[in-house]
Image (cartoon, one colour):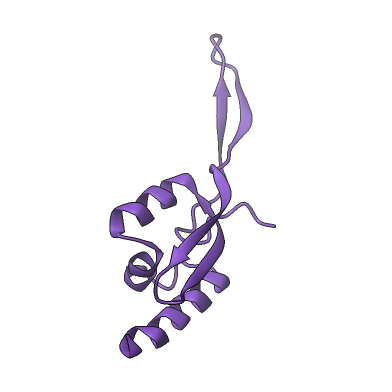
Length: 95
């Protein structure tokens, strides 16, 4: 399982630990990824995704997973998130 957010594409970054003596050693910055179930109103069932907590705040601010996915660019979404987006788009005109 990759360390990448399924909604925003945020992934692992690298940098340096810098000591008081200015010695630099490699380190890794990992995103805070959690597996969450988000309720989709259009699908009528929960959507289970592995997302960063920053993305969860964005989902809450945009008004839910349906609104977030419809507004998101396809290039940032994972394959699973794209599948959910297409399912929501199919259900949207019917509602």
